[in-house]
Length: 244
Ligand SMILES: Nc1ncnc2c1ncn2[C@@H]1O[C@H](COP(=O)(O)OP(=O)(O)OP(=O)(O)O)[C@@H](O)[C@H]1O
Ligand SMILES: CC(C)(CO)[C@@H](O)C(=O)NCCC(=O)O
Ligand SMILES: [K+]
Image 1: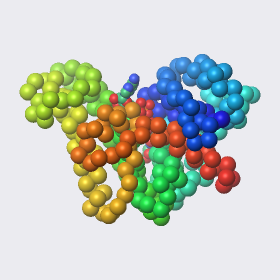
Image 2: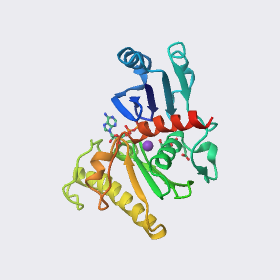
Image 3: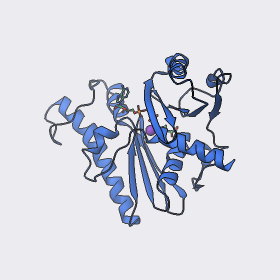
């Protein structure tokens, strides 16, 4: 059994895998890290490996306390990945994006893939059919858009996610919901259309905290898998073991 942990910029997600099957998923805050992991390990004492991808503020040292209980692997740029990295600054490429790209390459061999992660940030990652990682885009996620409108203006309230009634918002609240949610949807549909101009065929994987909300609003029909990063972490770890 493998315990995978994704330290994002907002919260931490974890999943226990038996082979390729996720047995249980967990979401918790950064200050609960040690307590929650101990709880998971108590519930699943057969966990032999703890595998971490962190883009958040939590460093490798925070996981070393578990080393007397199981094998700990903290993914870094030094690991082997199943793609050729064409990013001009490979050392600054987010480890979450590398894991997503690896998962896409391993799960969907020999085809073009676009991975869209709608989390704190929206990230777009393209891995072509020859397993070249080309790059993509980074933009603010849904909650970040609501927060930045409020934080950097005097008059805009902080709203929580709500589906706008129409694109013509007829009140401050509706105008903000339209700008944030419709802007988000148009952005993603627009990017997909742009990729379609250049690549005849590709599969799209949509993941992240806002994936389910998004999937039903996109013009393009896309299958959402909010557990894709943790699944990819599990698979990339198997790949690492087989190729080290
Ligand atoms: N309880 C929650 N707390 C925070 N965000 C939530 C929650 N439920 C849904 N969301 C949505 O999830 C998005 C954040 O996504 P996610 O939780 O995947 O981010 P994250 O943990 O920072 O991961 P990453 O850094 O990989 O994006 C927000 O835009 C928000 O709309
Ligand atoms: C873009 C985020 C914040 C998304 O989680 C993360 O992948 C990151 O910190 N990336 C570093 C910059 C880059 O990927 O080029
Ligand atoms: K993200």
